[in-house]
Image (cartoon, rainbow, N blue to C red; front, side, top):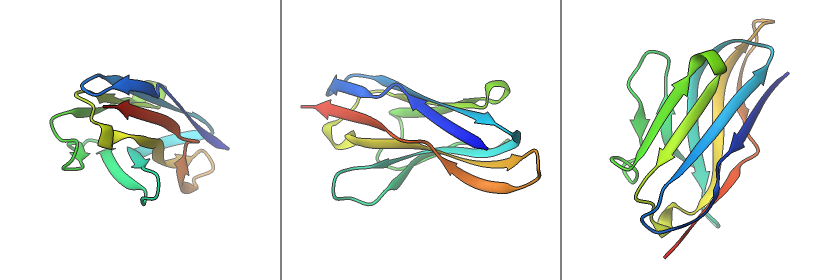
Length: 120
């Protein structure tokens, strides 16, 4: 079993910052990509930032220059530093990871989501 647990969401004023964390645990052999998605009310879930193994991170155009994704591979943890937050960044943020388990099964795993609310 693999589990992703997010933390760090909350309420912040526009222009403020938040840092999200997502820790993967369980029967993990290799963690390939780790990513952050978000879903605003009434909207589809969208990719915010992606960290691949050994590659450069990718960002949604709407967050480039403001958000930074980083990883601690030893801890199977991914972070999302969010600066200069805007009201349109409001939503539930989900962690996603593609993981190969010790039994050599590959799967995409999701966290439970953490709410980010940016007030104007």
